Amino acid sequence: MALTTKHLEMTLETQVESVNLAEEMCLRVAKAAGFGEDDCYRIGMSVREGVINAFHYGNEERPEKKIHLAVDLTADKMIIHVVDEGIGFKLSDVPDPLLEENLLSTSGRGIFLMRAFMDEFDVLPGKTGGAEIVMSKKLPAAGSASPNGRGGQNATPQQEA
Amino acid sequence: MSLHATHRDAGQVTVVDLSGRIVLGDGSALLRKTIRGLLEDQRKWILLNLADVDYIDSSGIGELVSGFTAVKNQSGDLKLLHLTKKVKDLLQITKLYTVFDVFTDEGTALRSFQ
Image 1 (cartoon, chains in turn brown, green):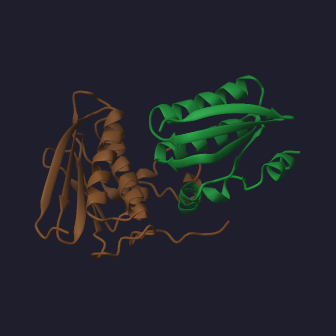
Image 2 (image 1 turned 180 degrees about the horizontal axis):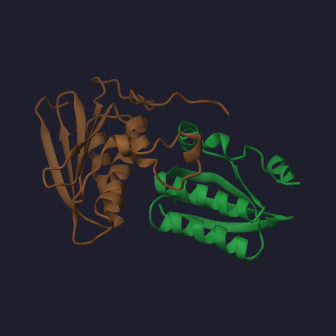
């Protein structure tokens, strides 16, 4: 595992294909960094949700706007930034999808999934006025990557129905 | 892997066999089109076989909920069969596992519609 920070960034078009592209790119980085299969799934899903959020809510699917994706690989964690060119939002304004009245909502679960699947998650004001999603996952200890991986610290305990 | 959907009749119930990923874009759109098409044909007892679906994102979850609501609004029912581990985990953390009727055996699922 490299001890120096590695930085990757790309500018994505506001289109559906960007979601898959971002997921694939981050999965390659995560696998190369030694994450196990389950953690790669969680990272890939979180990147998808971050870019979907930028595509749909931030940039309102307007093709003239861009989505900015950056990945930092530090000595101890993988940090992902997704920046849109919208008007920004506050986490406190996002409805809780687990509330009874929201269970049958057809949208609004992306933020929840990112929080559940990553170790750290926040939304900051973007430098150009949009929202910047910042999320990270701790790197597995050398030689400890396992198929089971780890859940995020915010992961909701599973329940049996 | 894109989503594929075929359906077969089992008495009054239509079993929809899905394979691939139910995600933003074509996957979610195909699921929506399939369910809406069945409802237009008055096939309102629907069992979604998710045995070969190993990935669903928030858009796919939204489409499942949308289909469930549309079917219920026509006094029908939509149930789920053979969840993979990832899909089951996803429905559990989003609390939707308690909303849908979920089965591990097709015969039992089909009989539950009666």
